[in-house]
Amino acid sequence: MSSAFEAIVWQDGKIILLDQTKIPTSETYNSYDEVADFIGAIQNLVVRGAPALGVAGAYGVVLAIDEASRKGLSAKELEHNLDLLRDARPTAVNLAWAVEQIRKHLPAGRDAVLAAAHQLAREDKESSTSMGNIGADWLINKLGSKPLTLLTHCNTGSLATTGTGTALGVIKELHKRGNVKEVYADETRPLLQGSRLTAWELMKSDIPYRIEPDGAAAMAILSGRIDAALIGADRIAKNGDSANKIGSLGVALACHAAGIPFLVVAPESTVDRSIATGEEIHIEIRGDEELTHFKGVQVAPIGAKTFNPAFDVTPAKYISAVITEKQSYEIEKGETL
Ligand code: MRU
Image 1: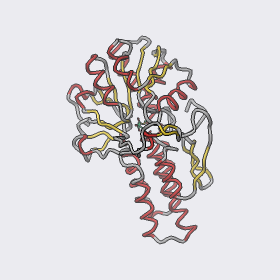
Image 2: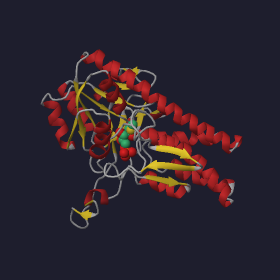
Image 3: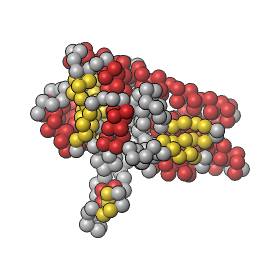
Image 4: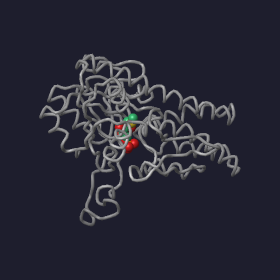
């Protein structure tokens, strides 16, 4: 990884997380050895981003085994803890996928489970590099080799994966090739993954950027400032419909209206081939406080009702291509996954 930090590390029987709720003002690492605390960290977005949640789930299985043997829990109690871990956040399929993949190794013993978790983390890291190359080739092929102004939404970089990232990994690769003029990072209301995390990563990678409110994205795109938009995904259906951070759909619609490429970049582990379309994706609805309060200060009338979906689903018809570590799926030409 080019940046000098890691979002998740397994160390001495504990999971160490770079606390993403504190970035950019502080780089704090928290350590976890209890499943309940670790699930709390996942739900509070100390670790977040679909591929990172997959790696967290994988190491979480080892954590659960170690806790069970330390506390003398029954096999049934262990399985229950693994179910809770799997379901900690519902939209990013990587979490449930990784927990299910890794728990299959339980009969082979704890060390085999740990080895499988390390392997999953290694593969996640390698997939970033591959997505970076395939996505950069795709955009250069489409738009020519010139400095591009790109727009991205939410955080999809080294904080969201164990490598360079998905959409942000493509941007980093384009920057290496001299093909980035500037990145517009949507601030990503309400938890500010764009202004806090993406901007921090772009700064660390020396990539020119500016942040904009989510509501400015359509104007930036329709006024001709943007050459292409790239986002990640939390779950992609067989037909290409893609769930990602709330606000992604608006970016896609604006790109469609402007006739510029809109790319979804995600590892194969984010593709859920068990669902035909995005209608089957369970969208996480988060609490009122994220909207009624800002940093603990009330900013809405007491009792205000909210609608706070963490993700939206962009229909395949608004997506130019889905880039994975294996290939580009040419969704606009009718290809499916
Ligand atoms: O709620 P978050 O921060 O976990 O949401 C993350 C996103 O929506 C990302 O864009 C997605 O997981 C892709 S990360 C490579």
